[in-house]
Amino acid sequence: MFIGEYGPFVWLTYLGQIFSLLCMYQTLNGDLASGLQWYILATLCDLFDGRLARSFERTALQEKYGQQIDTLSDMVNFAFVPVVLLLASKLSLLLRLVLSGLTLLSVTTRLAYFQQIEDQADQPLAYFIGLPAAYAGLIYPCTYLLTAMLAPSVWPMVLAMGALLLAILHVSRFKVAKPGKKAYVFYLILAVLVYLGLGWVS
Image (cartoon, rainbow, N blue to C red; front, side, top):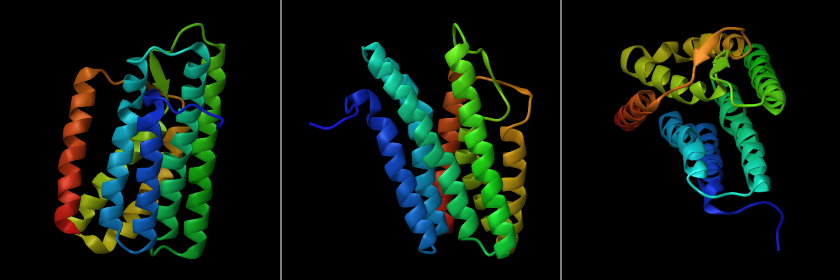
């Protein structure tokens, strides 16, 4: 009836996009802490959607679709959401636009580059080159929580510096080890703690 794939192997990916939409909605309505709580949920979906997908038997076409939809979801989660965070901030208009442009360009460049090299590689790479876009989903909530507890007035400047640094790191040539099981457990615990902390400061 409809194009696309709707099996359980893509449900978590789709759910992450919805959580990112709710993050953007809350942020644009002035509730940044609640918005970032949704963002953490979106990031967790991205963190575990690949593992969930691989637990199902899929055709080659379904695997390819999953890779494509995951890349497009990364655009929503780690390019569009940071741009909304920037545009909704109290930074000057020029700075908001410049940083938003750098964010979009760095994430799209990164995603296109890795799509290119993965298509050429015989087997998955053992490491990342540059900082994965998904790390933004933990960095922004963590830095906001820290500034909200210590010095709320400096958040716009922290956001600006963070966005600039992430844009550079996304496209820089340095190796980042792929996370193992212990790293996934650490990210999950960190996400839960930050989620609860954001509820406390909201």
